Length: 544
Ligand code: PEP
Ligand code: MG
Image 1 (cartoon, helix red, strand yellow):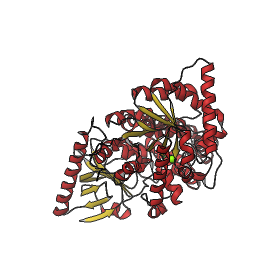
Image 2 (image 1 turned 90 degrees about the vertical axis):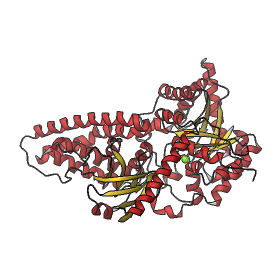
Image 3 (image 1 turned 180 degrees about the vertical axis):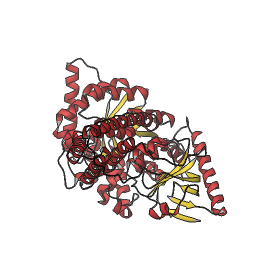
């Protein structure tokens, strides 16, 4: 038996046989051609086929992982149509009299290198995307495709790395788990695996890949990131038991649907869900969340190639509110900037984008964008119970300005005879240490606070959340972070506001009791964690 360590991406256990995902031969031959027009039209045909394949993948992803996660395949289609990309391929064919495969491969290398050399983490990640689309065109030109040795048996797919399109194309009925030798936990592939509920480990290393063969028996522990190849009987027995216990736990959690979020001594708390798009609502309802505590509205902007109009936004917000049938829906105004880049915003390159021009700072300096979103939100407010929340707040004057703009938007709508709900709640995110420290001043101005622990941790501990090299210095349970949350809770309650947590820490059940003791009113977590947190709440006794 040999064991390997990677990073667990989705917590579940798989035991089965390995199937290596063989990619088509990466080295593309340079062939001289006389008929360059013929080569260009071969490229056009392969591109058209690739576009229709990507549309199919998008449709599949939309069903399986929701709109926000499927969006990457729309981006791939746009990249395929990119003028510079196409011009480069046609120029290489024309000027060098070479085959289309070669022109695509050279263009892919050039573009990937250009993206990799960029400082911005989001742009860096585009290198993998340009390789993904280019490999697809080359496969379509040569007629070769990626193939694993699938039989009727379900298998553990192993690969050097997996592109998002390969991940989402996996037939869930034939895949027990997947393991990659490379890749990072922030990659689209990892995010997709989490949403597809497939046990997965990434970054298992080159040794793992060199040692394994098709048909080897393996155990994948998606919780710890461990992989055992040709496990001995004792290990098999242990993991069969762990797998059984995990499945039983997941089954038992389903029985909590319809039950209250109440502690043993009778304290109730709201457990809501976080979403990125209208398509995620199915998961919110399936997991019995009491509302939506964070709708990251920036995905509407990221999915579009231009600013979404008031009407487009209104339609999306109305749909979410109607689907939730009167349950609370908190929509965060756009949080663009830092790692969430959007071409048409034309944001300048910054040395420290996480500390830069992002979120509310864009809204307050681009009132045209902000007012359009607020008009759409207020118009939608009559279709349910809406809360509007503002990200990256650091000062009282920002909140004064926001409230002034909200009042102006409401007056405008009134003058136009357009209805909105006066019951719409306004809240701010506590995700900077500054906001937590002056929460006594901010609380009287709003209806609620929502703690964004992902950013609060990075700003409090001075640890860039995008940087995998400093993970050892990031202590999510750092007392400084917890004290800032506690201070904000006391100040919220002192001034009649309620407070929730919508960052990832809200789903950390080691902290649920501490949050309840602080007096946190709401926890908003990924839909698949709602029942797990409900389970934790129901086992706590605050009277002890
Ligand atoms: C947070 O910072 O905790 C948060 C919820 O916002 P995001 O992760 O979108 O920055
Ligand atoms: Mg944040």
